[in-house]
Length: 410
Image 1 (cartoon, rainbow, N blue to C red):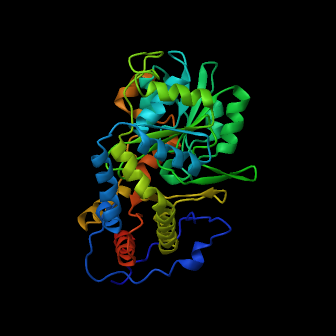
Image 2: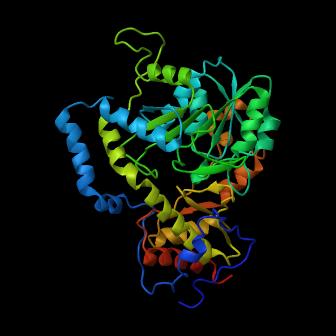
Image 3: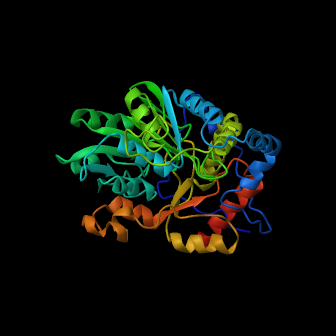
């Protein structure tokens, strides 16, 4: 269709890649757009399952045969493998990524009403966990290019009640942990990494390559099925170098005690099932390959959409190894684009349509529209496109073709 890939030049953000891997040399030029309609899901877990069905089935059956479903050796093996991957001493598995943040906040023994700074442009769990820990979420705006916490905005939000900062590594790219770590050290704050979308991500900080989850007091991960490393249900994990913090977390996840029926703390029930650990252990060796496939798909999109005046591709800063949990563009007339993709069966999603400071449940915090303009602007412009590892060349071409159709008459 003539003009289908005609979308060019609103200062597009090109992906900046690590020196050791230049995707522009390995990603083929975008092929012509397809001539017939091809639905493309936002995520295809069935395609992933098909690549390793026997391994996953055997992992699940192994736990069934053992009849040991709660914690135990399989969970301990998974914890050890993640600790090794991240490069920390401890990994403590729990029931969900939300619980991971909540358990860390409780383990830090903060006082009711203490303030924790979080971004308003993220999944609800980040601020929800702060609230449910009896603390006060304080919002600080994001950087317009990475969608992550702006360190200057965090500095401006500090008060004498601030005790912690939760840095979200949104969409698979790490926040500016160099700046945030310096700020936390200067003011005696706990720096918590919400790495739910960023397992395997890395950042060069002061010349040293560091993994997501290894910089702050703790890193919080999610294994929800749609994550880059996803289970067959909910699951989460906390990483830390701190012996004391790890010990407290291990108590909190089993009702606050090391010995059954003896409770040193008031904890909760937040354990990772052995079934989930077995699935995740089976998938873990494939994570690096899946990540590279996501990065190749992102690089292909960057080239195909680079000339677009109406669509702005994601930024990946040179110090970051972006794992592309989502490939999130900014789009003019975003809702028109979304409706067009929906009509043609192209998977897409808005992460996130309403910033947290404007959510009804946080009205008592006193924030108003206009308080965080970058977060509000992002909420009105972002759209995530399919980037999962099994995406084919033809599917990518269909996505780009349908995107360009929306704007070809402009």
